[in-house]
Length: 392
Image 1 (cartoon, rainbow, N blue to C red):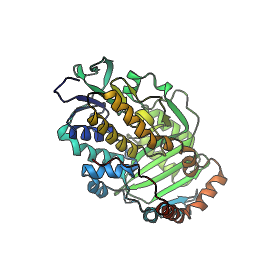
Image 2: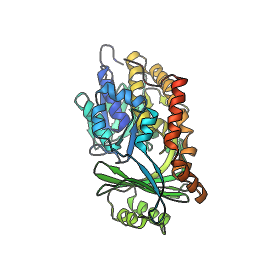
Image 3: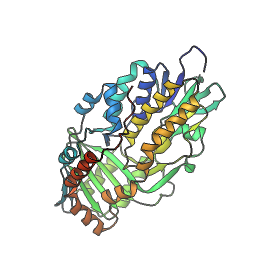
Image 4: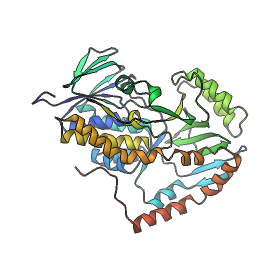
């Protein structure tokens, strides 16, 4: 880095991790530039939880109140059979109160928007563009863009998700790091609102989730990796859903009809990303690009916590970014690694593979608030160290 100048940092991806990181880098005196392939903010309408360390980060950014105003306000989760009869129910509000949780559920779209607005005045954004080449040396990284003129940056950070361009350019082909976890997920927006309702058939789930006057439909199904799958081919996605869910009951036929007519259908593999190291010289990865914890993890929470930690470490030793990257990785892996091992249990709860498993889950759902209260009480009796970011 040039002595006497504020380091320039290119962030690939204007999602949860990228916008949070840009905010904190600017606060620490660095100069962030964010490049985003989409023409504007792009994020699915899927509900996500801001919990644990992410609550602390959001509070320090001054956006927690805005997130609570944008909350989905889902109060209960019902499980129904093929005729629509309720066979299980979870009072999610009681569950939250039982655990003493400060978390808030918002859509990814709303979360990304709030985080972007918090730091847009101190960050340069390049929408509708992407990187095509990265060449680094001891003092910086030369970046070639698809549209913009080439530029040189002190550092490059990939916050560009499961199918990361940064990871491909700086670390290698996606197939070396992305592991299919035996499931696929699809989502689409619906008109009108509804209760959060889930219908299961063996190895398949279809659900409707309320989102502040609207609703989101989601499909999750177990499957080995599909041959020739293309995560950008919406017509292929429509055919996959039609084939997998043919013959299912409840509202599935109607939802499939809407999916075939939808322009915003999204479908992708439930995958995990695992790398031995998250950095390569002056290039480092953040969020799903480095360590996707799969659909059932805390991806948004971990992205916000990781962005905060990375910014703190870079601010502590701006002249030695490699050591800052190493400290960030060491600290953040303590949050990520346990989450990557939770997918089997989470999948068994949300997408049981057998009818017996569905029945057992439905029965157990009635006890979840009580079980959560017991766990919360134990944590009060035997306190554990909080993983929240260090106080600034």
